[in-house]
Length: 149
Image (cartoon, rainbow, N blue to C red; front, top):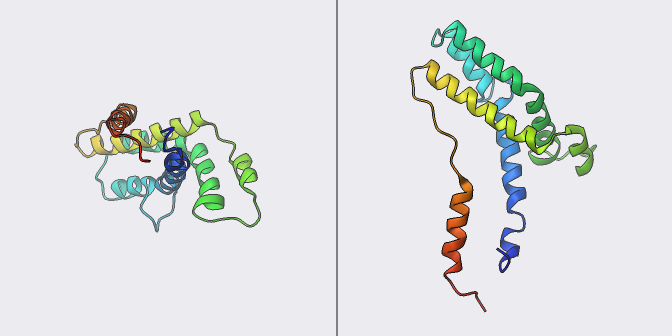
């Protein structure tokens, strides 16, 4: 990575922007987009999940809501749209989110997905893959090649 730092220079930012755009869209409450609250609402409407499952999902969505709002602030002012009224730092200050909150938001969204899966009689998905292992293996494989001159 040190030899090819320019390749990786914006990698973490690109991952963060993608995360914010997707998590904000996944947790928004609009009826004209595909999102988890709408999915839960439709499952309930058509009697495809129980009252208890619905309550569990809504509790998880409620837990995520304050942090989803923070993601929406960044998505709507910086990444999917660029606000003329807020500077980059001002948007981050307005969102006032910590790295732990982003982690917790992702984990809660994954819990919602698994709760919806089990409510429909499907198997939970194991989201606990270890990307660090893959990155280390990739770096090891890349280290086998001599640097370009």
